[in-house]
Length: 287
Length: 331
Image (tube, each protein chain N blue to C red):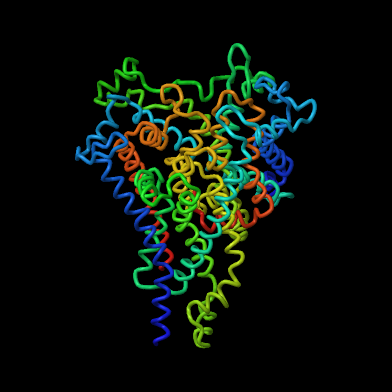
């Protein structure tokens, strides 16, 4: 009798557990559903007071408007979406390559002082970027990179060094040293060992790092808004903020715009969520 | 031997560019910002006249504006509520998922996907959901849902409500505090800005999946034998959680607090896209004030002072964390 009563919470559970999980799921999905439903409404149907109603007929008008429709002083999001692509792709690739090299050296070719250097490097990803913005703008101006796409790419690469190095270092640290020692005896040098052994094993590491960098660079707002002032160069986060901040833009267009801005990282997440998780737990650190 | 030294040289050459970049763009720049915060630089043209801690003193006074004091209050409100919400909700979801439910992967993804979205998107969407409505339009957003569910009494102004909960100096408790020499506590800067709750809701929606994932991984790491043993000893499920599981996942709670804590100190994008400074700075935060005063107002020295304070607080939180993680690894 006693064991039965002790076990009861465990067995009375399932229905309650599923009910709670379902309720939580609905709550978590609501913001996205609201975006979708509102984005699919026509202008006549959209108003804040009707936000919880489903659209009477599907209309892609708001998506079209957000994508290409020009408002006073604003261009369609298509330009900014492509800006984000041109920004994110090279910045992600270069920072992954850089992180892989750094991670390799710090995991397998430790030099004196590396144990102090590494945490100092890591500190760079926790700092509030406000504390470097003022000199950053001046230095970029001196380098003639201020206000350019190249400048923004450069900044993302520099401030991506800590996290990419961390993930790769942890990844390479798990590869047995014996493998390295054996090829050293075979006469391979530092670059040969990387090319022949480490790099071919790195694919999952690259996927994790690239997802991480893709997501953070695509979603970045602070660097973008400070460095690119020309609307024709601004990435989508800045453009969306301008679109949503303008009173002349209807809600359905704002919601369609928000969904367009969220879509690439959402797709990456949906298809590669396993890697997203391991990046999260491996890095376990970045916001 | 010769090959080895050559490899050594190459290894240093490989990391040198990164180390140099971080030395300049992180440490050098922080130094420059710290230096700027001690100067008179308050327009586009730099003016490096030394003024000591004047810019800091101005931040903590109510003249010419009490904005920074409001920001500190809002940051404390936000951080406390956001951390509690993420820890409680994340733990609760992890416990539910740990019960070997069917479709665990789907649920996990549903709770985690908001992390993949930009704060700007989150802000735009939640601003819409929480828009309180006005007498002309009637209730909108969540308020409308409350009406529909017959919970109309829950309706309120969300992020447009400028109410600050604090101990009024003239109230009974306020005079009591003044009597015992704690007059300072009865001030609108020691209080809770209710408008911040809306920002907390949006941020929790975005980040609670993180604590869920951390807790779930930790729960999975607890050997089944330990729970079994406790069960055999006659412990109830609740007791097992309180006596066995909660103490074992304390390290996870600590690192979640540090990681989320430093994020909440830096919170910026969400405020920009959702509320801005709000009525009477009810949703203003230091990171936003810094950006506003520096890049819109041209008060570079003032902005540098805010940035330096922000960095100091983050460093106080992060450096012990980095040192202890590093020490664990070396061992």
